[in-house]
Image 1 (cartoon, helix red, strand yellow):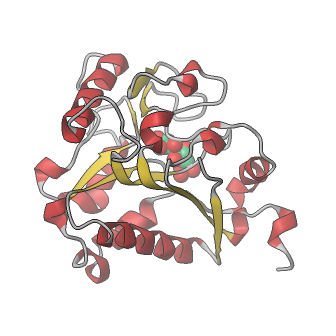
Image 2: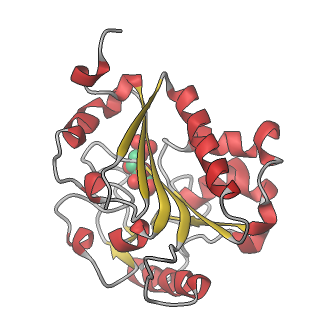
Length: 246
Ligand code: 6PG
C-alpha cells in the first residue's frame, strides 16, 4: 500500500474544515451508493458538527450515503462512550435515513457475537465476503490514533492486529481508557477503501505522531488504504523537527 501523505493544517478548526472538504470530495466522486466508515474518540467531533451544520449538510446526498463505524466500545447505545451514539447525536440522527446508519450492535451477547453480526451486515452490504481490490468496500474510512499508536480498536501487540481472515473482531480488553471491551474492523477491511483519512490534532498527539513519523511499526502506521492514505495533522501535533519555527 502507498505511503501515507501528511497534510498540515494551522489548527484543529482548519483541520476539521479540511477533513469536511475531503469527505465532500469523496462523495462527489461517486455518483452511486456511497459508504463512509466513521470513527470514535474526540478527534472527529468537530468534523461531525460541520457535516451537520447548515453550510455543509445541504451538499450531502443523504439518500445515497451509508454510514458505518470502524470500531465500537461494547457499551449500550445510551452510554456516552458509545462511538456511533456520538456520531448519531452530533449529526446523523437529524439528517440520515435510519436504514443508512449501520451501528455495531452492542445488544449482542458479547463482543465476539457483535463482531460476527457486523461482519454479516458489512458482507450483505458489499454483496460478497471476499474483498475485491477493484471494488473497495468504503469510499472513505475515518481514523484517529491514541497515545499508544492504536487505531480503530487495534492495539499494539494484540493478536487482532494480525487478523487477515475475519472482517470484524471482538477485543476483550482495551489497552488504553476507556477500559471496556471493543469490537473492531480488521486491517484488510479498513484498507478496502478509496481513502483512509486520519485526523491527528493537538499537542497531546505530538509524542505518538513523532513515533509514527519515525516509522515505528504501530497499528496506526500499518493501517493503510489500498487507495490513498492521508494523515491530516495540525501544527500542534507535529514533531519538533518538521514543525519548523513557530
Ligand atoms: C475509539 C476510537 C479510537 C480513536 C483514538 C483516538 O473508539 O477510541 O475509534 O481509535 O480514534 O483512540 O481517540 P481521540 O480522538 O479521543 O484521541
